[in-house]
Image 1 (cartoon, rainbow, N blue to C red):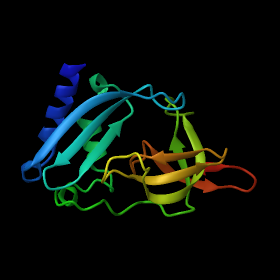
Image 2 (image 1 turned 30 degrees about the vertical axis):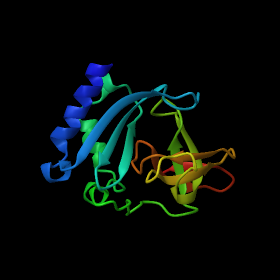
Image 3 (image 1 turned 120 degrees about the horizontal axis):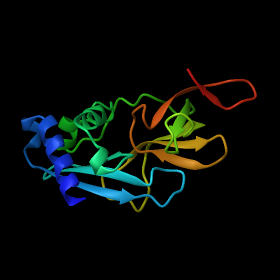
Image 4 (image 1 turned 120 degrees about the vertical axis):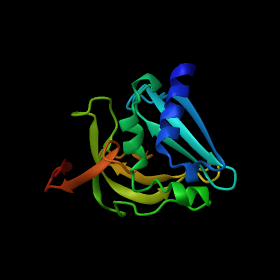
Length: 171
């Protein structure tokens, strides 16, 4: 596990521009999720700048499964703002607004592991989270559960459309 986490760290360093790496510390860890509706193991890449923010970026897979393409896709998320984070600025350019119909990934299966809902809050954070950490969205699922989307990427949250008398269908 330690070797795989170090490999993921090197992959991230190979992608992140050198200018952004000034003052940057990267920590990679595998985290077990106790919620039966999420992936059993997530790989969390935490980016911390000496004079900026600390931002965790998660992938719903083990470190051994992470590829350069996964990290590149994660860093292309519109909410990932490496230059801003280095300066201590929060992320911007979210894709969805409050009350937008969405589908959220809540299960392992890439086809059936989605649940319909609507965006409840932007820039959501919980009291017990470290300073500077927030999720782009809090979502109320159609079944009434409240969850948060940790990243604004299609692998986690995607656009949905409301249909009469039903939940959300993807476009």
